[in-house]
Length: 105
Length: 105
Figure 1 (cartoon, chains in turn cyan, orange):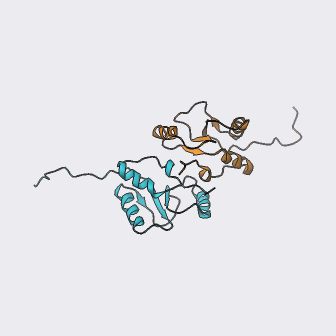
Figure 2 (cartoon, rainbow over the protein chains, first blue to last red):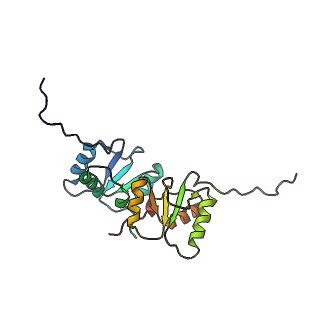
Figure 3 (cartoon, each protein chain N blue to C red):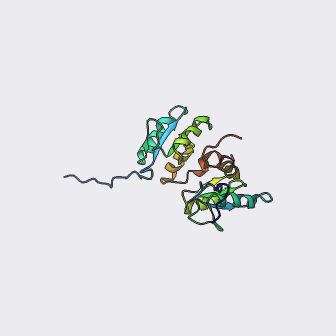
């Protein structure tokens, strides 16, 4: 049997158990990158909005569909892509609250 | 025994199980009013910040102490007083997400 010369680097799994939905339009390649990061760190990317989603990631502004989603799923958080990138940069789960999307004044 | 002539109006208890902390300065009388609404609807108002708090209600802007609080209590939400007033107006729990406090750009 052949042993590896170096330890196999592990991907951290800090998104385990969390489910994400990527909502709306994203700048070119950003949707793909978000999908990669979320999946790499053991998060689930849902193909459609459903009641199991924990985090809606969006680059857009608050819209009326968010209120409807909250009626079905009271624990949703609407969060900017920057949160995902920040978690990757720190290689751990960081609080999402500073990156939350709220209605414009 | 004397029976009431009219049914005793019940206070709704939609804040049951939820714990609140009122953070920072509030306009005159507003802290008292928030305490009354939260308590009326069966919420608990904590006298100091602790890990059981679910919602920090504040009229102020995001500050660094919020990040510290999140390190101890990852599920905190920072919410404007308007949310409490809106729940009272509707006489039911409405989503807090549109009323969340985020760092200023």
